[in-house]
Length: 389
Image (cartoon, rainbow, N blue to C red):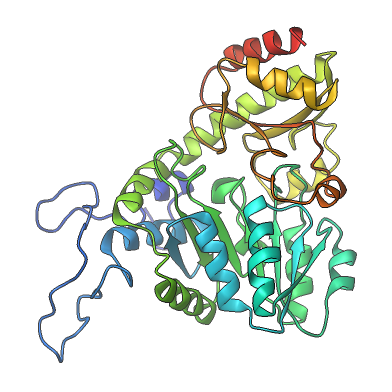
C-alpha cells in the first residue's frame, strides 16, 4: 500500500489504534484494569504516559485513537456514557453568562441537562429549528458561545445541514458541536463538513451489542480537545477499560452491521407505508422523506432508525408495542437486536408536552431501531401487531 494512501474505513475500523501486545503478542488490546501506574522516578513522572486511570488508561487510549481515525479528527476523548460526553463538552466550552443554540429536536437527556441543570449555573439556551440556517443565524446573540446540533435528530430524524451551520458558526468563531450518534462516522463525518466536535453515545452503533454504555467526542482543534479532557478528568466521567475493550471489538463490525441494519430499516419503512393502519412513516431513505435531498448530499447512508404513527393515537400505539414479539420494547437503539420505543413515555418523558408537540414528538410516535434479524421476520411481526389493532 502506498505510504500516502489512508486505508479504507473498513480497514481502519479493524486496525486503527490497535497493536499486538508487546509482552505476549496478543492480537486484542489488553484490558488494563489498573488504578495506578508505577513511575520510573520523580524526574521521569508520566514518562510512559499514564499515572492514574481517571486521567488516562491504555485500553481507553486505543479506542480513542480508533475513533479519531474513523472521524478524521485531531483527537478523541471517551466517557462513561453519552451524556457524560455531552455534559463535559458543554461545561468545557460554556461559562456562566454564555448562550447556547440547541436543535429543537434533541435527545431527552440533552434537553434535561440544558434546561434543568446548566441553567442553574447561568447558561442560557435557545431551542432552534436548526434545519433552517436562517433561523440559526437569527438566533445568535452577542453571548452565543456554542451551537449544538443533533442530526438526524432523536426521535423525529429531522436533519441539519452541517456544512451550512458550520459556516455560520465559523464566521463568528462559535464552536459547532454535532451529535453524530445515529449515523456514526461510517455514514456521516461532521468534521469533514466543518464542525468542530463530533459527539457519540458509543452505547449505540459503535458498541452495538447492548453490552455497555459509553460516550466519545472527537475534536478538530487541540485547545478544544484539551479543555474537554480537563473537565472529564475533574468530573471523573472517563470511560472504564472494560467498556473500552467491548467497544473496540464492536467498532470492528460497525460498517458491516450498519449496512445490514439500514437495508432492514428501508424494507420495514416501505412495508409500513403500505399498511392501512399506519398514519405516516419517516425514514431518510424514503422518497417521501421531506429532507431526502439533504440526506443524500450529507451522508452516505440512511441508518437503521425510523418512526411511524399508527391510526388510533396513543391507545393503538401502546397496544401495538405490547403485542410485538420480535421487536423488543426497550430504551436503546443501534444494537443487533431490533428495538421499539415509545419516546413520549421513555426517552423524552421529562420534556414538556407543548415543547414535544412543537418539535414533532407526538404522543403516538413509535420509534424503531432495526437490528440484524431478517427483514422478512421483522415485517411479519409488525404486520401481525398492526393487523390486530
